[in-house]
Length: 90
Picture (cartoon, rainbow, N blue to C red):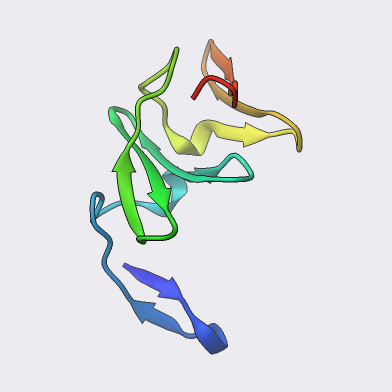
């Protein structure tokens, strides 16, 4: 795992909570950063640089690569499953 640091240099790093993952399942709602890979759902805590387990209302088995935005709302679309993120009920 690497983090892009000062002077655009990659620095080796480790996180707590989630230590091995693929970046294609990392996504943002515009404010927070999340990781979604089936039953593995995490929120990234920028202050502590750690991943915290996350539970969602309505859908808890998402894959981050199927999450997208229209610039206002955040959606999850996979086959016939379609959800919109309700930021007031996280």
